[in-house]
Image (cartoon, rainbow over all chains, first blue to last red; front, side, top):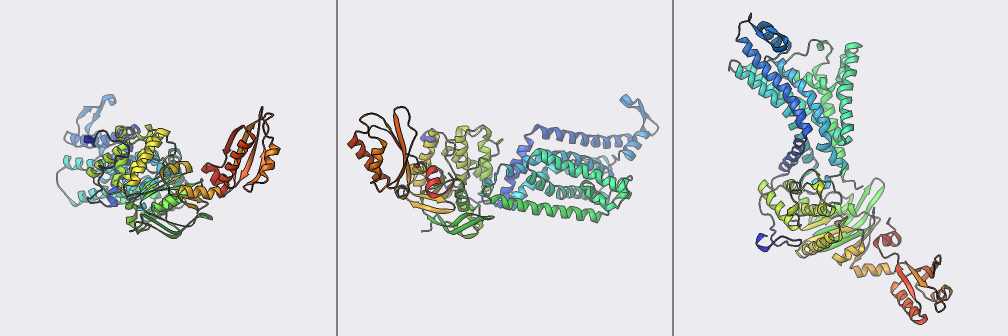
Length: 317
Length: 318
């Protein structure tokens, strides 16, 4: 165009039909996902929450480092501890290993992933409208579905975006912690370490498969941030309280705790990690299979609902 | 030669509402205008032609490919009426994302985005966020995304909606060029006048049925056979004919179905009059002006606009 002066409307002669190779619709899903994430990453609020997640990560990161460093000192030695005065090395090691579990054991990762999970909840509550709700609210679908992609490609893209957000806050930093403990440790591979590595990734997978379909279904149905956040609070805080009250206070059947979805996810995740449940709640836990079944049913129901929601998109209002 | 778009006995229900009723069309290259009131079924028909909505009965084919086959969407470009963009993206990012949905590689997406931005005259605005675009710019971006894959069939839903007259004229020019380039362009509008400026191939959709199809002259002729309301106003004065005298003459005219007196204004009389065969009626009025020295101040067809036309003549909701 440049050699013929500035372009103007109607100037279509320079346009050439495409003769290259069309990548498939699954690659198109990646484009949707990439731009979803660009939008989320463009929000200061996301980075604020991510920073919060990083603080937890650094707590564990330096906790593990401190434990290894303290292990090299004499047990009876005393060291200055800022505002806490002076602390005995033995007490520090006991606190890190026994109470805080920052020793690279499965319990380390259980605690870390559970803590990060609450940040994921907040991110999901706030990102739902941006990721998928607005598409339903503002009826953006003609732009997507007039292209050669189908509803399942769209859903895959949205699921991928949510999965990336979730794993950026959970699995990825957990893996960094794992490799830190490996580097700070004896540099020896063992079946236990391999199992732990697989367990961390398994936990991430459980969180992804358990949360993402529910997140997408809730966000597509409620569409706006406030209702999505309310729903999230209801499911992950209110129902959690009800579950604890019914089982731990009223001593009803442990199966009532299945309404606490976060507990269900952790139960399965702990099994993956090979970590024990916290002693205070262990007697009140339902069997792992029931938690798995609950999440599988909810996940399936969410996918069916999503399909139904997308199926209604063609309705011209 | 395969038609660009074939719609064969297509019907569509939304619950108990029949949105399209046995519609059949066959479009070759060139520009086609679809006129109809809100709720007439225009958007349903266009989305069906864009392979977005599947018919409950009948079949839609784009260049011979049924719209329920996966390849159909690659053959059609669709510009929706809705303005649901990612507001925080720039126009360029928006187009590049949609180009990727067509399966283009990163480099090809950039090249095609740049080409269509040039096409629609939005290159200088490409780095601005969509939320800062005017209605006219949004229409152009929507148009650009429908052209990304250079389709042979272009479906444009209300492309002039909210566009200022200058931008409208530019779009008309652009559509004319597209129409001449071997593509088939089907667009919808509320306004028959607007459609007439672009094309001589017009379809009028009413309550899910094609009520009229043909050139603008044929459509107008069809409308001419229907009753139209005219308003007449004239100055009073000793030399001016009275309403009674005029009405006495109108009673002899076959094309006049009836009339209603308007409240007299200062120095003016007026009435509305229902007529068929407008041309005969207008000739008669001209003769009355001549004969009586009638100083007619206003003569206007109240049903000329498409809105009124569809509402009154064809039974839709204006």
